[in-house]
Image (cartoon, rainbow, N blue to C red; front, side, top):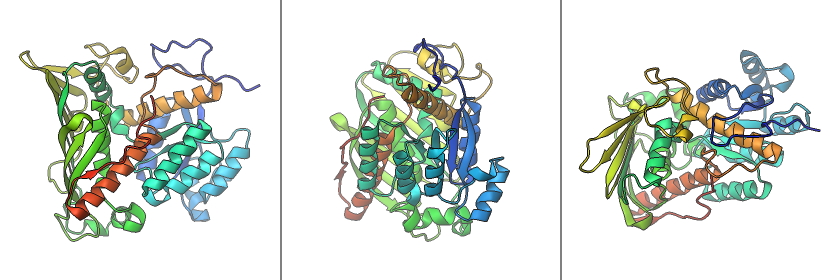
Length: 404
């Protein structure tokens, strides 16, 4: 009989419990983001990396695997080989993280789901809406856990903002503004860098570059905090720097459920902005504002009252659910690695619950799911069509959300 991973009696209102063993994680994709995510997964003390496809070249895969201290027989050159071999091992991976370039997400995710292995996939989920919807259907049919790498939604202050808005803390929402401004594409020769070339290749990156990469983070964050689906948009794509085959900048007017208006901007050519993700949600009684470059603070405004700044850390007015995602006391900063770790922590709890046959209460974990990933693909598709036509475009809302 398989030993339970979760305790017999779980305090769903308290801190996330320890497991009876670390979960086994596989890595698919050997780029920079894979190292970041592996570091974050290890930080949770719920995962150990045991296998991987770190290159499609067998020799390179073995060399990279050795760098990761992976056993030689668990360094694979294809995700098909890895899915088959790991699913047949008694100590096979419990889940995989997919951090390949965009064009391989769908095929890799499908292969591991079919092998009965849970998945955490980077965004954008796929390059085609039809593929994203297929992954939703398959996940719902199998009951497997499928997380998507919108790690920005896993900052504690973003969870606190979501709670405040959901509880009516700013009244009825009347506008939403979000932007993601970066500056790393400012140099004229940036397109020559190896890690940039695939991001500008439509065959790999899909029909967008900036929108599919950072624009989807902005769109997801706006809906995640507001609780409102984006329903319509009007988009303009621009190449503001050196000539490129795909956009480096996008400006959008947006609308959400209930005809709530908003704006969305994304660019990689804003000198002085490195992590310039900023969200503002305003309502009939107040507003919340958050800035990635000052991620430990959430500004809460109640009209006619003194402004409040809520700080990440134990105590200081954050909710019990937010406390679960806090590791250090106030005054000791946390950042993007910890946000990724929060995603992997919640993913671990969901994987363990599925394996134990436990149905946790709604809200126990809040990580982005496959439906949120599909929403990002639908957002990208609508923005491409709007840019081409110059018109407002409705966003397909099919299968938009799964219940947390």
